[in-house]
Image 1 (cartoon, rainbow, N blue to C red):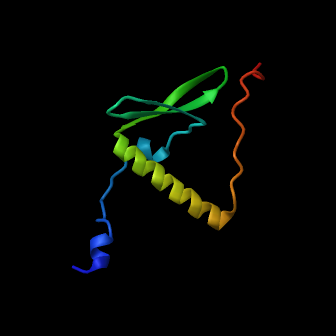
Image 2 (cartoon, one colour):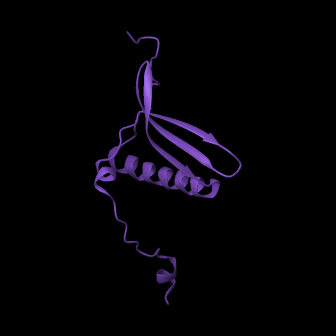
Image 3 (cartoon, rainbow, N blue to C red):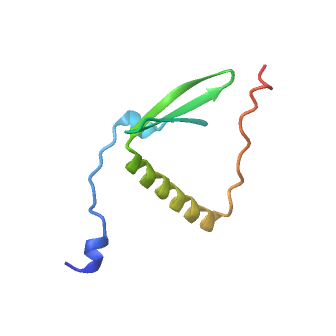
Length: 96
């Protein structure tokens, strides 16, 4: 086996259901953790309330790899399309 074959990750056959294929909208993320796991609640916030649209529970080791993968993909995106300005947090005081 060559060095390239050793480094190349195995291809996975991943199936996705119709509901998951649609995706879920979230404009807020709440993060909690215990010693054993991280809980990521993706929330669709329409002030004054929000609803959790997806929850992901993962181990600290997996979360670290997720953060690294997100950072690498964000860097590639910005190299191709320019810097993304940081959005302002939601203004909860201006809700009528």
